[in-house]
Figure 1 (cartoon, rainbow over the protein chains, first blue to last red):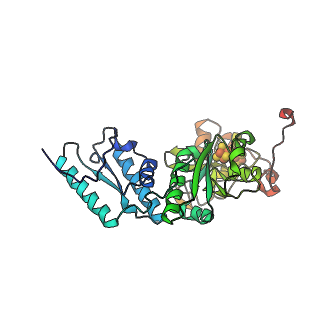
Figure 2 (tube, each protein chain N blue to C red):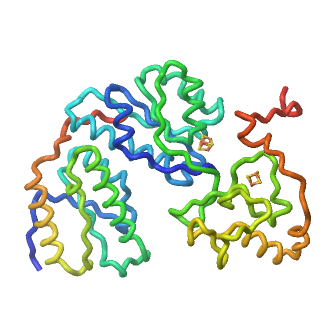
Figure 3 (cartoon, rainbow over the protein chains, first blue to last red):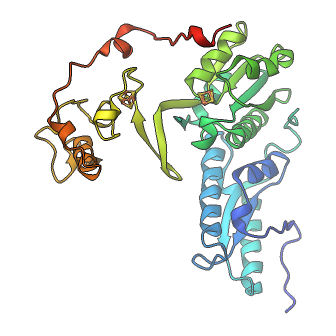
Amino acid sequence: MRLTYPTSFRIVRVPCSGTVDVKHILRALEKGADGVCVIGCMEGECQYKTGNLRARKRVEQVQRLLNAIGVDGERAQMYNLSSSDGPLFAKYAEDMDERIRKLGPNPMKHKTKPAA
Amino acid sequence: MIVADKKPVEEIIGYVRDCKKVLVLSCNECVTVCEAGGKKEAGMLASALRMYFANQGIADAQVDERTLERQCDQEYLEEIRDIADQYDAIVSVACGVGVQFTAEKYHSIPVFPGVNTCFMGVTEHRGLWTERCQGCGQCILAYTGGICPVARCAKRLFNGPCGGSSNGKCEINKDLDCAWQLIIDRLIAIDRLDLYEKLFDIKDWSTDRAGGPRKVEREDVQI
Ligand code: SF4
Ligand code: SF4
Protein backbone atom coordinates (compact mmCIF):
# COMPACT_ATOMS: atom_id res chain seq x y z
CA MET A 1 0.00 0.00 0.00
CA ARG A 2 1.53 3.29 -1.09
CA LEU A 3 -0.23 6.14 0.57
CA THR A 4 0.65 9.79 0.67
CA TYR A 5 0.21 12.06 3.63
CA PRO A 6 1.19 15.71 4.14
CA THR A 7 4.93 16.35 4.21
CA SER A 8 4.44 18.77 7.08
CA PHE A 9 4.14 15.79 9.41
CA ARG A 10 6.99 14.73 11.68
CA ILE A 11 6.44 11.38 13.31
CA VAL A 12 7.70 10.66 16.81
CA ARG A 13 7.29 7.02 17.69
CA VAL A 14 6.32 6.14 21.24
CA PRO A 15 5.66 2.70 22.72
CA CYS A 16 2.12 3.70 23.80
CA SER A 17 0.16 6.95 23.49
CA GLY A 18 -0.11 6.80 27.29
CA THR A 19 3.58 7.70 27.53
CA VAL A 20 2.92 11.09 25.96
CA ASP A 21 2.67 13.62 28.75
CA VAL A 22 1.09 17.08 28.81
CA LYS A 23 4.61 18.44 29.14
CA HIS A 24 5.80 16.79 25.91
CA ILE A 25 2.93 18.30 23.91
CA LEU A 26 3.46 21.73 25.46
CA ARG A 27 7.20 21.55 24.85
CA ALA A 28 6.68 20.77 21.16
CA LEU A 29 4.34 23.73 20.78
CA GLU A 30 6.65 25.95 22.79
CA LYS A 31 9.48 25.02 20.46
CA GLY A 32 7.47 26.04 17.43
CA ALA A 33 5.42 23.06 16.25
CA ASP A 34 2.25 24.39 14.63
CA GLY A 35 0.20 21.56 16.06
CA VAL A 36 0.60 18.25 17.85
CA CYS A 37 -1.59 15.25 17.33
CA VAL A 38 -1.40 12.15 19.42
CA ILE A 39 -2.50 9.01 17.62
CA GLY A 40 -3.32 6.09 19.84
CA CYS A 41 -4.88 2.70 19.34
CA MET A 42 -8.63 2.27 19.26
CA GLU A 43 -10.31 2.83 22.59
CA GLY A 44 -10.74 -0.46 24.40
CA GLU A 45 -7.79 -1.98 22.54
CA CYS A 46 -4.85 -0.53 24.45
CA GLN A 47 -2.21 -3.15 25.23
CA TYR A 48 -1.70 -1.41 28.55
CA LYS A 49 -5.46 -1.10 29.04
CA THR A 50 -5.80 2.65 29.60
CA GLY A 51 -2.86 4.31 27.82
CA ASN A 52 -4.94 5.80 25.01
CA LEU A 53 -7.63 6.97 27.45
CA ARG A 54 -4.99 8.76 29.49
CA ALA A 55 -3.58 10.27 26.30
CA ARG A 56 -6.98 11.69 25.39
CA LYS A 57 -7.36 13.27 28.82
CA ARG A 58 -3.92 14.80 28.53
CA VAL A 59 -4.65 16.22 25.11
CA GLU A 60 -7.85 17.71 26.51
CA GLN A 61 -5.82 19.19 29.36
CA VAL A 62 -3.45 20.78 26.83
CA GLN A 63 -6.40 22.16 24.87
CA ARG A 64 -7.81 23.81 27.99
CA LEU A 65 -4.42 25.21 28.94
CA LEU A 66 -3.83 26.62 25.46
CA ASN A 67 -7.25 28.25 25.38
CA ALA A 68 -6.55 29.76 28.79
CA ILE A 69 -3.34 31.42 27.59
CA GLY A 70 -4.95 32.73 24.41
CA VAL A 71 -3.59 30.13 21.96
CA ASP A 72 -6.03 28.04 19.95
CA GLY A 73 -6.57 24.75 21.79
CA GLU A 74 -7.27 23.01 18.49
CA ARG A 75 -3.54 22.90 17.91
CA ALA A 76 -3.52 19.75 20.03
CA GLN A 77 -5.60 16.82 18.84
CA MET A 78 -6.14 13.17 19.69
CA TYR A 79 -6.97 10.48 17.16
CA ASN A 80 -7.48 6.76 17.49
CA LEU A 81 -6.83 4.13 14.87
CA SER A 82 -5.80 0.55 14.53
CA SER A 83 -2.12 0.07 13.68
CA SER A 84 -3.02 -1.75 10.48
CA ASP A 85 -5.24 1.05 9.18
CA GLY A 86 -2.88 2.98 6.90
CA PRO A 87 -5.58 4.77 4.88
CA LEU A 88 -7.15 6.12 8.07
CA PHE A 89 -3.75 7.34 9.24
CA ALA A 90 -3.33 9.24 5.97
CA LYS A 91 -6.81 10.70 6.38
CA TYR A 92 -6.13 11.84 9.94
CA ALA A 93 -2.84 13.40 8.85
CA GLU A 94 -4.63 15.35 6.14
CA ASP A 95 -7.35 16.34 8.54
CA MET A 96 -4.77 17.65 11.04
CA ASP A 97 -2.81 19.42 8.30
CA GLU A 98 -5.95 21.15 7.09
CA ARG A 99 -7.03 22.12 10.57
CA ILE A 100 -3.66 23.68 11.35
CA ARG A 101 -3.41 25.47 8.00
CA LYS A 102 -6.72 27.12 8.83
CA LEU A 103 -5.30 28.31 12.16
CA GLY A 104 -2.09 29.58 10.56
CA PRO A 105 1.45 29.25 11.93
CA ASN A 106 2.20 28.86 15.62
CA PRO A 107 2.11 32.41 17.03
CA MET A 108 4.90 31.54 19.45
CA LYS A 109 7.38 30.37 16.85
CA HIS A 110 10.89 31.69 17.53
CA LYS A 111 9.60 33.83 20.37
CA THR A 112 9.98 31.71 23.47
CA LYS A 113 13.10 32.11 25.51
CA PRO A 114 14.49 28.71 26.43
CA ALA A 115 14.34 27.67 30.07
CA ALA A 116 17.60 28.07 32.01
CA MET B 1 -0.27 14.63 53.39
CA ILE B 2 -1.33 18.16 52.65
CA VAL B 3 -3.72 18.11 49.71
CA ALA B 4 -3.78 20.97 47.24
CA ASP B 5 -5.55 21.63 43.97
CA LYS B 6 -4.27 23.46 40.91
CA LYS B 7 -5.05 27.11 40.47
CA PRO B 8 -6.38 28.20 37.06
CA VAL B 9 -3.48 29.37 34.92
CA GLU B 10 -5.38 32.61 34.20
CA GLU B 11 -5.17 33.49 37.88
CA ILE B 12 -1.42 32.88 37.97
CA ILE B 13 -0.93 34.92 34.78
CA GLY B 14 -2.73 37.74 36.59
CA TYR B 15 -0.05 37.67 39.31
CA VAL B 16 2.99 37.63 37.06
CA ARG B 17 1.94 39.35 33.84
CA ASP B 18 4.18 42.38 34.50
CA CYS B 19 7.24 40.35 35.51
CA LYS B 20 10.20 39.74 33.25
CA LYS B 21 11.83 36.87 35.10
CA VAL B 22 9.74 34.33 36.94
CA LEU B 23 10.76 31.23 38.87
CA VAL B 24 8.21 28.44 39.23
CA LEU B 25 9.20 26.64 42.42
CA SER B 26 7.80 23.19 43.03
CA CYS B 27 7.97 20.82 45.97
CA ASN B 28 8.85 17.14 45.90
CA GLU B 29 6.57 16.04 48.70
CA CYS B 30 2.82 16.32 49.41
CA VAL B 31 1.90 18.43 46.38
CA THR B 32 3.77 16.01 44.10
CA VAL B 33 1.68 13.12 45.40
CA CYS B 34 -1.59 14.99 44.88
CA GLU B 35 -0.39 16.03 41.41
CA ALA B 36 -0.85 19.74 42.01
CA GLY B 37 2.61 21.20 42.50
CA GLY B 38 5.37 18.69 41.78
CA LYS B 39 8.12 18.85 39.18
CA LYS B 40 5.74 17.78 36.45
CA GLU B 41 3.07 20.35 37.25
CA ALA B 42 5.72 23.07 37.58
CA GLY B 43 7.02 22.13 34.13
CA MET B 44 3.54 22.42 32.69
CA LEU B 45 2.91 25.76 34.36
CA ALA B 46 6.29 27.18 33.34
CA SER B 47 5.74 26.05 29.76
CA ALA B 48 2.26 27.63 29.71
CA LEU B 49 3.65 30.89 31.12
CA ARG B 50 6.47 30.98 28.56
CA MET B 51 3.95 30.46 25.78
CA TYR B 52 1.68 33.12 27.26
CA PHE B 53 4.50 35.69 27.25
CA ALA B 54 5.59 34.71 23.74
CA ASN B 55 2.05 34.95 22.47
CA GLN B 56 1.77 38.43 23.98
CA GLY B 57 4.92 39.40 22.10
CA ILE B 58 6.93 39.82 25.32
CA ALA B 59 10.06 38.25 23.90
CA ASP B 60 12.43 38.98 26.78
CA ALA B 61 10.35 37.28 29.47
CA GLN B 62 12.02 34.30 31.09
CA VAL B 63 10.32 31.58 33.09
CA ASP B 64 12.47 28.97 34.85
CA GLU B 65 11.55 25.95 36.94
CA ARG B 66 13.13 24.50 40.02
CA THR B 67 12.09 21.73 42.37
CA LEU B 68 13.01 21.62 46.04
CA GLU B 69 12.77 18.54 48.21
CA ARG B 70 10.51 20.52 50.55
CA GLN B 71 9.66 24.17 50.90
CA CYS B 72 8.78 23.91 54.57
CA ASP B 73 12.41 23.33 55.64
CA GLN B 74 15.14 25.93 55.76
CA GLU B 75 17.94 23.83 54.35
CA TYR B 76 16.09 23.07 51.14
CA LEU B 77 14.96 26.64 50.68
CA GLU B 78 18.59 27.73 50.96
CA GLU B 79 19.28 25.89 47.69
CA ILE B 80 17.92 28.85 45.72
CA ARG B 81 19.77 31.50 47.75
CA ASP B 82 22.26 32.18 44.93
CA ILE B 83 19.70 32.50 42.18
CA ALA B 84 16.62 33.95 43.85
CA ASP B 85 17.72 37.58 43.49
CA GLN B 86 17.61 37.50 39.71
CA TYR B 87 13.84 36.89 39.66
CA ASP B 88 11.06 39.47 39.71
CA ALA B 89 8.69 36.91 41.18
CA ILE B 90 8.51 33.36 42.45
CA VAL B 91 5.39 31.26 41.88
CA SER B 92 5.47 28.58 44.55
CA VAL B 93 3.37 25.55 43.71
CA ALA B 94 3.93 24.06 47.17
CA CYS B 95 1.17 24.20 49.78
CA GLY B 96 0.45 27.44 51.60
CA VAL B 97 3.11 26.51 54.14
CA GLY B 98 5.75 26.36 51.43
CA VAL B 99 4.58 29.59 49.82
CA GLN B 100 4.80 31.40 53.15
CA PHE B 101 8.16 30.00 54.18
CA THR B 102 9.60 30.90 50.77
CA ALA B 103 8.23 34.44 51.15
CA GLU B 104 9.67 34.62 54.67
CA LYS B 105 13.16 33.53 53.56
CA TYR B 106 13.20 35.72 50.44
CA HIS B 107 11.87 38.84 51.96
CA SER B 108 12.23 41.25 49.06
CA ILE B 109 10.95 39.00 46.25
CA PRO B 110 7.21 38.69 45.58
CA VAL B 111 6.11 35.08 46.09
CA PHE B 112 2.76 34.02 44.64
CA PRO B 113 0.71 30.88 45.35
CA GLY B 114 0.38 28.50 42.41
CA VAL B 115 -2.06 26.09 44.06
CA ASN B 116 -5.06 26.19 46.38
CA THR B 117 -4.17 24.37 49.58
CA CYS B 118 -7.17 22.34 50.71
CA PHE B 119 -6.69 19.97 53.66
CA MET B 120 -4.79 17.12 55.29
CA GLY B 121 -5.98 13.96 53.68
CA VAL B 122 -5.42 10.73 51.80
CA THR B 123 -5.36 9.49 48.22
CA GLU B 124 -8.41 7.22 47.96
CA HIS B 125 -7.44 6.48 44.39
CA ARG B 126 -5.65 8.44 41.73
CA GLY B 127 -7.55 11.68 41.23
CA LEU B 128 -9.55 11.48 44.47
CA TRP B 129 -8.24 12.94 47.70
CA THR B 130 -10.33 13.24 50.84
CA GLU B 131 -9.94 14.94 54.18
CA ARG B 132 -8.96 13.04 57.33
CA CYS B 133 -7.53 15.37 59.96
CA GLN B 134 -7.94 18.99 60.98
CA GLY B 135 -4.96 19.14 63.31
CA CYS B 136 -7.03 19.87 66.41
CA GLY B 137 -4.00 19.36 68.65
CA GLN B 138 -5.68 16.82 71.00
CA CYS B 139 -6.15 13.63 69.09
CA ILE B 140 -9.08 11.50 70.23
CA LEU B 141 -8.83 8.76 67.62
CA ALA B 142 -8.13 6.20 70.35
CA TYR B 143 -11.76 6.43 71.46
CA THR B 144 -13.47 6.75 68.10
CA GLY B 145 -12.23 3.61 66.39
CA GLY B 146 -9.57 5.54 64.45
CA ILE B 147 -12.12 7.68 62.64
CA CYS B 148 -12.06 11.39 63.27
CA PRO B 149 -15.33 13.13 64.12
CA VAL B 150 -13.62 16.53 63.96
CA ALA B 151 -12.60 16.22 60.34
CA ARG B 152 -15.22 13.84 59.04
CA CYS B 153 -18.44 14.74 60.81
CA ALA B 154 -19.95 17.81 59.14
CA LYS B 155 -21.08 19.06 62.55
CA ARG B 156 -17.95 18.00 64.44
CA LEU B 157 -20.18 16.08 66.84
CA PHE B 158 -18.65 14.13 69.69
CA ASN B 159 -21.80 12.26 70.52
CA GLY B 160 -23.18 11.38 67.14
CA PRO B 161 -24.79 10.35 64.99
CA CYS B 162 -27.30 13.15 64.74
CA GLY B 163 -30.83 12.71 63.43
CA GLY B 164 -29.66 13.52 59.92
CA SER B 165 -27.78 10.25 59.54
CA SER B 166 -29.63 7.98 57.17
CA ASN B 167 -28.55 4.67 55.69
CA GLY B 168 -24.99 5.45 56.74
CA LYS B 169 -24.92 8.75 54.87
CA CYS B 170 -24.71 12.31 56.13
CA GLU B 171 -27.63 14.67 55.68
CA ILE B 172 -25.50 17.35 54.05
CA ASN B 173 -24.68 15.13 51.09
CA LYS B 174 -25.95 11.68 50.24
CA ASP B 175 -22.54 10.67 48.88
CA LEU B 176 -20.84 11.51 52.15
CA ASP B 177 -20.44 8.78 54.74
CA CYS B 178 -21.79 9.60 58.18
CA ALA B 179 -18.62 9.70 60.31
CA TRP B 180 -20.49 8.36 63.32
CA GLN B 181 -21.86 5.43 61.37
CA LEU B 182 -18.26 4.67 60.38
CA ILE B 183 -17.15 5.03 63.99
CA ILE B 184 -19.82 2.65 65.30
CA ASP B 185 -19.15 0.11 62.54
CA ARG B 186 -15.47 0.17 63.35
CA LEU B 187 -16.00 -0.04 67.12
CA ILE B 188 -18.10 -3.14 66.48
CA ALA B 189 -15.39 -4.57 64.22
CA ILE B 190 -12.70 -4.16 66.90
CA ASP B 191 -15.10 -5.27 69.63
CA ARG B 192 -14.91 -1.99 71.53
CA LEU B 193 -18.48 -0.77 71.41
CA ASP B 194 -18.06 -0.11 75.15
CA LEU B 195 -16.18 3.05 74.12
CA TYR B 196 -19.37 4.37 72.56
CA GLU B 197 -21.09 4.16 75.94
CA LYS B 198 -18.32 5.94 77.80
CA LEU B 199 -18.70 9.61 78.65
CA PHE B 200 -15.68 11.71 77.90
CA ASP B 201 -14.56 15.01 79.36
CA ILE B 202 -15.39 18.06 77.33
CA LYS B 203 -12.77 18.41 74.60
CA ASP B 204 -10.12 21.03 75.16
CA TRP B 205 -10.40 23.21 72.08
CA SER B 206 -7.65 25.59 73.17
CA THR B 207 -5.20 23.49 71.14
CA ASP B 208 -7.34 24.00 68.02
CA ARG B 209 -7.23 27.19 65.94
CA ALA B 210 -9.44 28.97 68.48
CA GLY B 211 -6.33 29.81 70.47
CA GLY B 212 -4.70 31.65 67.54
CA PRO B 213 -1.65 30.48 65.56
CA ARG B 214 -0.10 27.45 67.19
CA LYS B 215 3.36 26.11 67.71
CA VAL B 216 5.01 22.93 68.83
CA GLU B 217 8.12 23.53 70.88
CA ARG B 218 10.23 20.56 71.93
CA GLU B 219 13.13 21.39 74.18
CA ASP B 220 14.31 17.77 74.14
CA VAL B 221 15.29 18.06 70.50
CA GLN B 222 16.61 21.61 70.60
CA ILE B 223 20.35 22.06 70.94
S1 SF4 C 1 6.09 22.61 51.53
FE1 SF4 C 1 4.04 21.83 51.80
S2 SF4 C 1 3.83 20.39 50.14
FE2 SF4 C 1 5.98 20.71 50.39
S3 SF4 C 1 6.61 19.09 51.86
FE3 SF4 C 1 6.20 20.93 53.01
S4 SF4 C 1 4.12 20.59 53.70
FE4 SF4 C 1 4.39 19.21 51.99
S1 SF4 D 1 -8.93 14.25 66.52
FE1 SF4 D 1 -7.82 16.08 65.91
S2 SF4 D 1 -5.71 15.43 65.59
FE2 SF4 D 1 -6.97 13.56 65.67
S3 SF4 D 1 -7.46 13.16 63.52
FE3 SF4 D 1 -9.13 14.42 64.31
S4 SF4 D 1 -8.55 16.53 63.87
FE4 SF4 D 1 -6.74 15.26 63.59
